[in-house]
View 1: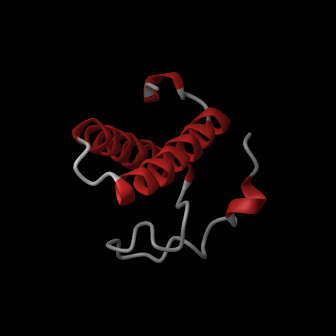
View 2: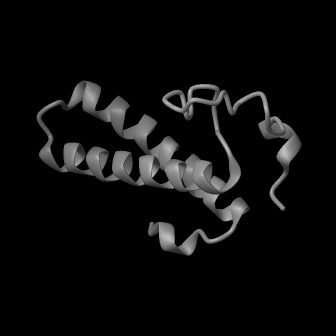
Length: 89
């Protein structure tokens, strides 16, 4: 899935969830097939996409977790609406 298709908040959030699910699933597979190079390549691809989509979301809409932006000088997590208060639009 390309992140360029995720130009609005709802679609971007959905993509993050899909990439996260794919990461969880492939991690379980790699637990029992650690030498499967195709699976490892897929893991790296999904990890890259997950990080890219998460960074894009946080840049546009604010942190997804309390750990986001921990290198910043400002504690952003508590100064914005909580994730469940933001909605998609």
